[in-house]
Amino acid sequence: MSRIYVALDLETTGLQAERDAIIEIGAVKFRGDEVMGEWSSLVNPNRPLSQKIERLTGITQNEVEHAPALFTVLPQLARFIGENPIVGHSIQFDLAFLQKAGCTFSGGGLDTFELACILMPYASRYSLGKLMDELGIEFPTRHRAIDDARAAQALFNALLARAQRLDQKIIQEI
Image 1 (cartoon, one colour):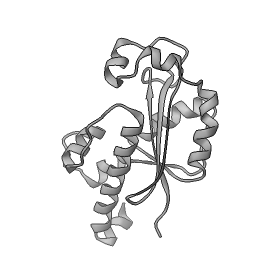
Image 2: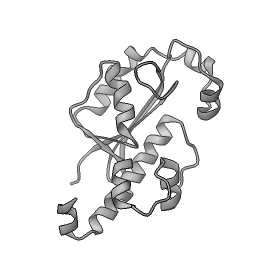
Image 3: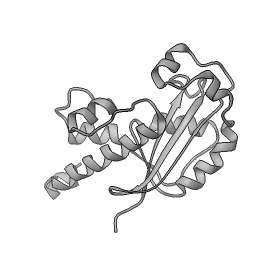
Image 4: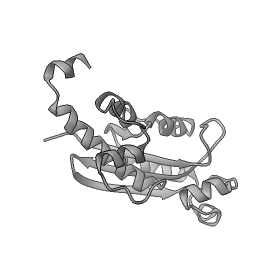
């Protein structure tokens, strides 16, 4: 029986954990292709959203104003993740925001960006969307946390399948 992982994605007001805030969290617990559960929540960032973020995510100021505060959703997220490893695309970005909020996880993080750089050295770009397109994996809704978490799960599984086809000597070298 294979290991359980949790694919995680955040949507934020910007790119810097020190000054920006989380506006949406999405997580998918999975074992291979089997989805064992999903968890998501909008989060009130207690600040206005820029028009750029509203256009990118489709999340409106009105939606986040009525969303729960981060401190109320983090315990639920922590219970959902448990001690399972976290998978995500450029996962250190997401973990930095959660760490700033005082939420750390013991299972470690697996970065699909780093895995793709190793297993798909020919890719022209390594964004989540471009990798999904390159692999022919459907990814219709982008920049929403739960959809990006689902995409991270699919990408992780595709990359694991590629890794399993490699010669064992290459795997050991990596």
